[in-house]
Image (cartoon, rainbow over all chains, first blue to last red):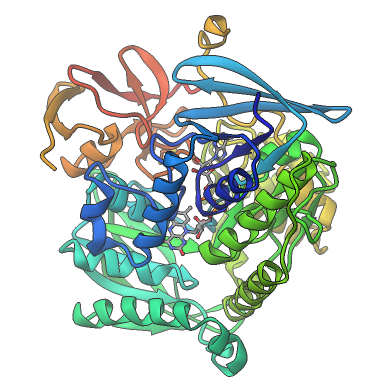
Length: 461
Length: 88
Ligand SMILES: Cc1cc2nc3c(=O)[nH]c(=O)nc-3n(C[C@H](O)[C@H](O)[C@H](O)COP(=O)(O)OP(=O)(O)OC[C@H]3O[C@@H](n4cnc5c(N)ncnc54)[C@H](O)[C@@H]3O)c2cc1C
Ligand code: FES
């Protein structure tokens, strides 16, 4: 019998597992990837050790992964995808597809560490093969040893663009342009935050060194606003625009590339928490996150959450939260432990850094003018901006939920993970209103966590 | 670490992959950027998110539709095909 069940084997989940086990609680760690490490410590088909070149903070990852594997109190299920979850009067039931079979896990004690994925914004041509997310380019490189293209444009906003550009250069690719939409280096002015988080600054310089060795021109205050396909239907070039502070287009030029990696920060994957009925709130960056108290406990007693799903903040903050969640969950099942002041201080320090980053890399509403009526918004169901406008103007949709029902926007296989956030903004713009928290939270409501192939269920235990 | 190389087919082409590599990564390494055609507009699509979130990299694997190329591991002798339309 496992006392604590943890979902997610990234920085948060690994830290939580070790903390709970160290406090004396037996742990079951469930993760859908084939190898532990989550999105950050993504290891290649090569041994993780051989990936030193690609990775800044690899030592920490190896340390955690090996420690988790070595602890007898921790059982790990890799390639285990939770596809459905319910909470019934304190009892959580997880339905897991583990190595092709369905298993059911019942537990009163759960730590959710399901992480995040790249946030994307729609623009004309963003569905052409060759347009990707920075995370996608990174995972192909780190996880599979494949460079996505020879001439790569890296664009969007946020510090994550740096490791991706550096990775492409190290692997022998050319970064034809590194484009950051925001100009502000506002966080530089908050001196204390920087002093507190010097290791992060060291990391940034490590990437910048690599990037400048690759003679890349970094441009601030620019964005990719359109992509163009060659006759074969694949990416040939992108339009890069100088933009103002609100992301409104000023001047456009075209550049050739075979891959454009474009990302706008991250979106938390709260689907599992949502299915259980955990309270969700809208964070400062307008992403929907799981609400937790100071001990990382959600509104459901015994259900904890840590890492990106409680707010986008990077791997260091995820680890600090994971440790606290692990201790709190162990305490919940009766282990004699407590969260120390040092733990709380570390989390607070990293939270301040995360807050500074969110302030420095905002996403302004000017992007809503980049798509035109023909631009695909929902990639799965092929719904265009024109279709969405029609649902508002002609069919009388009064919010994003009704627009979704009229158009099937966000009702395809990805269940709105890619377009959901943008649809809320675009429909509100059409209606001339501001999106409400209810609009944003209902856009992440997914009854099934992930679609599973028919037939698997028949083989269940 | 030495890695064994395996082979699978994509439509009528033979594709090499390192063991452990995903179908999508191996196809991209072979410069195969388009993986499916959409249902309505018949637009080409390929790897977008790369981590199993977007469902844009759908291919048919050994006759089963809607497989995400970016996360399914390449296995020797696998028969992978372009997915044309249907993704229900
Ligand atoms: C593609 C990608 C690359 C990134 N690279 C970097 C980087 O280089 N540097 C950096 O600082 N940050 C990077 N990030 C940001 C990153 O999200 C955080 O820094 C860090 O990984 C967050 O840790 P976490 O533990 O919260 O979640 P994650 O690391 O995202 O781990 C979540 C884990 O939960 C699993 N999971 C989710 N849902 C389920 C389910 N239903 N059933 C079973 N398992 C599930 C996932 O497979 C995953 O392994 C990246 C993010 C992405 C999406
Ligand atoms: S590329 Fe997004 S699911 Fe495969």
